[in-house]
Amino acid sequence: MTELGSSAFDSSRAERALCDDWRSTSVDDLSVAAGTARAPAEVAKELAAVWTAAAHEARASIGAHARFALQLMQLGAPAPLLGACARVMQDEVAHAQACFSLARRFAGQEPAGEPLGLDVEDPLEEDRTAIVLGVIGRGCIRGAVASLCAREALEHCQDPATREALMLRQAVKAQEAQLAWRFVTWSLRNAGPDLLDRARVAFLMALAEQRRPAPLGEHERALLRFGVLADAQRAALEQRVLRSAVLPCMEALLARPTAAPTRI
Image 1: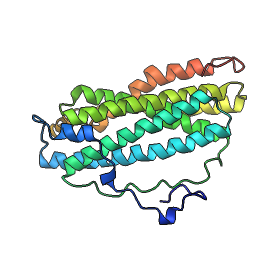
Image 2: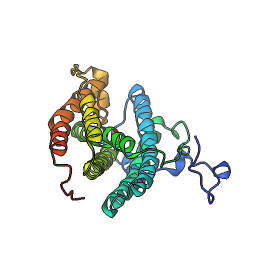
Image 3: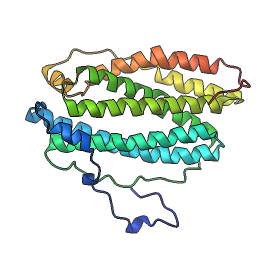
Image 4: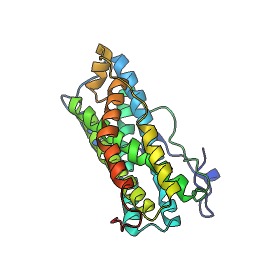
């Protein structure tokens, strides 16, 4: 992957950031505190993989929101949306640091893979419709689901350092979802019927898949004590948030007169 290029920044000569550069002091301190739970070896290996993936995902989200900020400017978005986007980026930095710290703790070494630069093409190549549909999937839906999953994991997690990381994750994903809904609301004001119809389809497609929860085994319970939900739990929570929160918000949003003023 390559860095975001500009005349003032030559990615070919840029020093790559090491995972060691991405740490959270507070999470590290909690990880060595007295009474901190120790995970069995097989559980620790899986936890290291989970938090390494979460760390790289959080870092990529910073770049994604930097790209989104340029798109907001392209579309002439109001200042409050740009400010909210900047706050999400700042909080994702802390979230990524916490994830990298946990990954290192459970792996017993630096996480595998360097957090390389984000591969970003021209951020202004998409039109309004493509941007809106992307934000619906990334923020309105996945952001809301991720926030609820983090909150659910917090209720079961017994590890202090992991709880701090989960609290950061819950907060930043809730911010992402809120930003996404505000942007979509603003974008659909005075929108034509084509964009409204495509937005509705994007929401409804996310609601189409039905998955049933499955009973947890001993391994899944061990992971749950360290704040990692089983796939079946995540699937059940996804359906809950889609039907109890996303769907009602979608119906309220798309039922509004398109010419009505929207508060940002």
